[in-house]
Length: 101
View 1 (cartoon, rainbow, N blue to C red):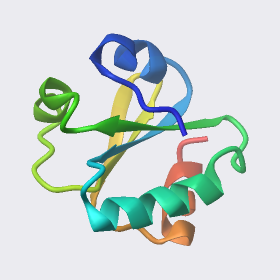
View 2 (view 1 turned 135 degrees about the horizontal axis):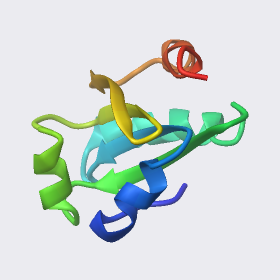
View 3 (view 1 turned 30 degrees about the horizontal axis):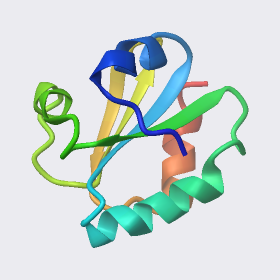
């Protein structure tokens, strides 16, 4: 799964439905969430999923008020639509994404 930093972030979220996973490599729940997202990646047509490492992209994490990880944010055409903090079950995550398709 692609990891995006500050320089590519705006371009990546600018069109369509995008799920962004704010994570850190040392975070156990983040690794569990990553495994769920790996299963989902490419299974929902028209949705991009990518990750932002909060340790590498601290300014981006601050911009979106990331205080706990994992935090998942759904964007549609560059607009923040939904924010979820903590581990998200696959079915609930998919249902949230599909609302914006």
